[in-house]
Image (tube, rainbow, N blue to C red; front, top):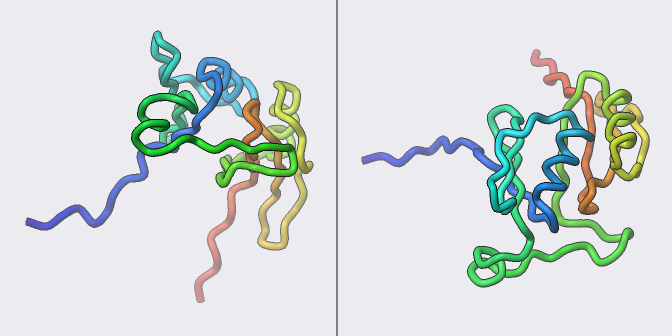
Length: 141
């Protein structure tokens, strides 16, 4: 019996202080629709295509006791060892919307040498969010 060598990337889970606030922030700042927020406010999901963006509390039995405590940034000069990246057709408009809805500006959108327009903000938990244009596939000879 062969195993499945082609797994599907199902979730990115973001550990946060307040799940309900984080879900509402991402919906407003980045334009996502809320798929689910459970009644206990311990799990929330956003509609984001094939991969679900999920939020859960940073401190809970599953993290602290089983897999280890979630480590957060200590200062604004430090950041979590993860970056959330979203692609937009209009990066400048998306960046402006995010900042208007409470995202902290880090770097305004600029054109990069690899052909992408990219800007950075921090979310309401201090996580860096990259907002970039869609990258065109490389030309094949």
